[in-house]
Length: 567
Image (cartoon, rainbow, N blue to C red; front, side, top):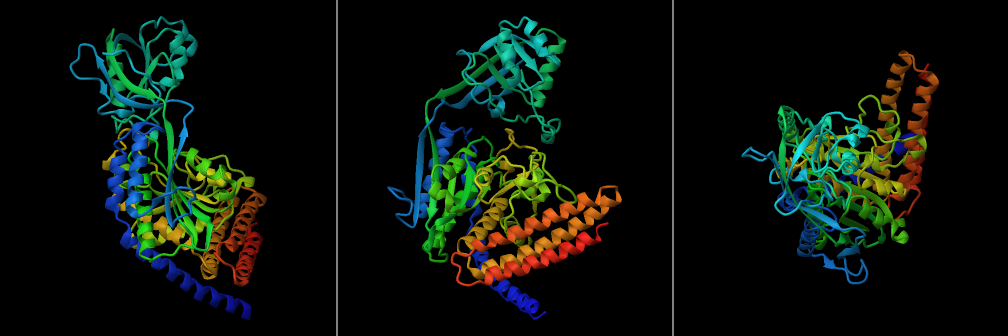
């Protein structure tokens, strides 16, 4: 009994101490993050259709470079730690040519207004699409509603344009064999609400070096063309201008050197490619302002990072994976990874909410209660894929604190994958995703700057930096407070799962299966507690280990009670 009381007092006292440290970081980031800067960068980047190596992608990288230089980062000459604040641009030859759109129009011959134009729908040209002959081409269009591929092959499409309500890339090979000169298609998922947002087109791609071009239509354009085709013979004039050329791929990496353990680091990653404002110009802009603020606080001696803080901008997944795998020594020191992807949504316009995508925990297997996957879809997670770590709860609690302060809605989703957090996890490094979903303008050409909220970017930036500052300079007090936090979160989760399991047993599920779920959650959390041992920059006593042992006993004791009650 004395031991329990002693540990309770220890948790309470040290929890306040650690919280005060985090509160100090919150004060700095809330005062220092300038959402106007983040928004201006987002507005600059979103003007471009960004593909690795093309004009817009490279211009975005160099714009970030200008922000870093102005903030005080110096270009790395030999070693990333040769100065406290360094950056470098990595250049790599590309195996394939890069691509960028220039212009496009589809006109129904005989009508005065274009059916659709690049000026209003820049996603109408799929990535890798070539140009038409100068001045465009005019040809009959053949509308096929639901014809089978074998039927299309038998059709006479020589010199004609194939139009179908399917993704044009799926019909490209068949259309080419049938002699078509081009393919028009339509492909919009339900969550984009195409019948409401009738001008949206999701960007797509096609096979490079194809002799046949393809174009994508919006719902409105598709319906209008369909009506014209059903009335009788329809001719289209199509003009496409694109650029395809050799280039080099750029990645920019900035570092704030840690004073004690510089080889240990927290890595932020934001991908540059993709044409949207929220996806992912907002990630680029938010991360650029986070780097600027960090440099300012460091130079003003308001923060003194003990570990290194790294900021990375590049090609989604590719640049992050390469950063991890190309230098195995560096990879050993990466303690946390965070992806900023689609972080600027004005949720009143886009729908959805801010989300933290968790590392694989049991909710990715047993998704029930308030746990919900997004429209992106569940990943194929099994028990062997689970990744127990305090990072999930630590980041979520930081974001909830900012949410309470700023009246900002914060939610989470079980692991799904698909962004820059994935390479971290694949290499056994804790990694999380900050994002928004479901966004009705996701991947569409209506994802423009008017859908971006400066305030949303500020809340994300504040949360991300406060968490990173806390972790890169964590001491034993921070670790012990985290143990207490994780224990509390674990007990809350176990209670929730216990109540859900009782309901499932009442519905006919087996007690054995429901007990197994409780057991897996308990093990996930007790294993997560063990990872707190590595949080302090320097371990000087056995206090953290003792706190972990005490918290583990509490979780195991409560788990036993729940298992005994499940009948």
